[in-house]
Length: 281
Ligand code: PAF
Image (cartoon, rainbow, N blue to C red; front, side):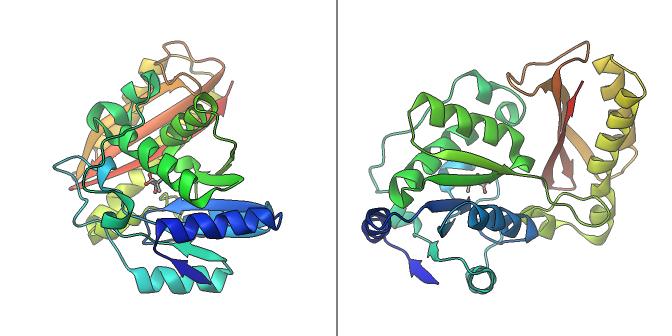
């Protein structure tokens, strides 16, 4: 596996791959990899001839009081995992290499970033679309793969790709879960033993919502209120949001119909976890 830390080296390598008609797929990550990331790598491998993974903890998507400094990092472990998986290139620029000191330009999103995570993390998605654009212009992929756990991110990136004419196909990998249902996340590392148990309530409350809806409930408020009750039984849990929205516009729905996204962000202790489920009615 070739490791590239420099933007211009990555760009010229990507040019040489394209000249040889290689099909480049790309999995952007912030590192501290888990099986969820590796499942995205598999999707990339099955859909291309050359796989690039990036590791870059992007400062512009973290708010001033968020966990940029403490975000878990283990480059050597990540490198071994990707090597063992047969990844072709690991692109891992430093912060200084990737953002010049006088960086001024950001990719602003429209209304999709006003909902869900955008409410409690102002500028988060602006940071995501900015870094993803920079990564796309550096890695020059034909395909990029993202995880459905970040449902809002997926929607915003697909819209950006469409609006800004990026010639890149976006593929989406399903949410990877622990055996007991907890969605895999690099931030699960922060959880204490008690919090790890309490964190299960995210997937449990999504399961409860799904059951209510399959049993015929169509009143969004009622479903959310049952989910909320279940979550708040856990002492360490504090709800950031629990919403049922249109899976396309992210606007709240009162009467459940069409394709809906049930989305959650819950603090377990100090750790903010997200999870979601899409249901087609
Ligand atoms: O999903 C993530 O890990 C990040 O938001 C991404 C897409 C790598 C951009 O920093």
